[in-house]
Amino acid sequence: MNDLLDEIEAPIKEIVPTVQTTVKQARGTLKKVDGLIGQVGTLPADVTKAVSTLGDLAGRLAPLTQFAEMAGGMFGMKSTPSS
Image 1 (cartoon, helix red, strand yellow):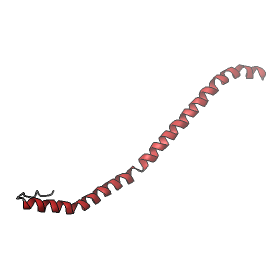
Image 2 (image 1 turned 90 degrees about the vertical axis):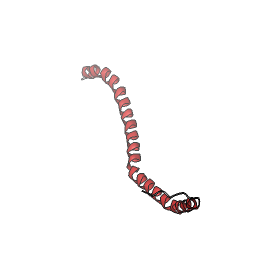
Image 3 (image 1 turned 180 degrees about the vertical axis):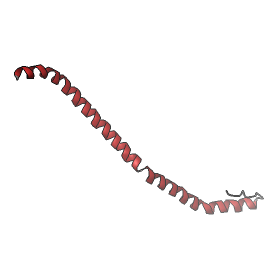
Image 4 (image 1 turned 60 degrees about the vertical axis):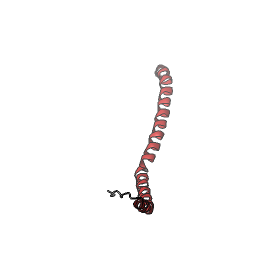
């Protein structure tokens, strides 16, 4: 039994640090991937919020657009049709 242990001890001592390093790298990679998944997971909500904000901005700028059209009419400018 001791002969068997003596025979496999050296290769195991060489392999264990490599396995430990690989496990540490895998953990680090998984943490990064988990962080990216967390960021991408909120993307639909962020896009919805951005679109909502743009819609709100357009609504708030409507009176300014009307004012600009009236001011342009006072100086003989024709208003451009909105699409």
